Length: 138
Image (tube, rainbow, N blue to C red; front, top):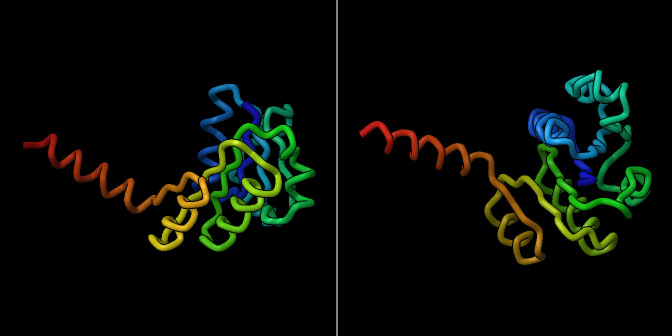
């Protein structure tokens, strides 16, 4: 699969690494050069992972990243509003089939879900996993 990830912070870089391990072609759009350093240098140097140093919510950055050929678009910055803008643009303007975003705010989650954008809430997932682990200890 051809995957575009916006954001190279903890979530974005972890996703890029894991999806690259599975053999997917990864393009990361990140405007902060310091965050790009979290990505595995060997994969970037080999071309298995491409980095675009731009604001990932903009159309030109998405076009440069090859959004016309993207199978999946994931907005994984730390900002709900930026994630939502990027995800909506990928879904409605560029017609990417599978669009996902990380959100913190439940209101944003409801809105993006209604637009056909798959949302995840890291705090909710962590809480679910912790509860499941506690349930296993009984």
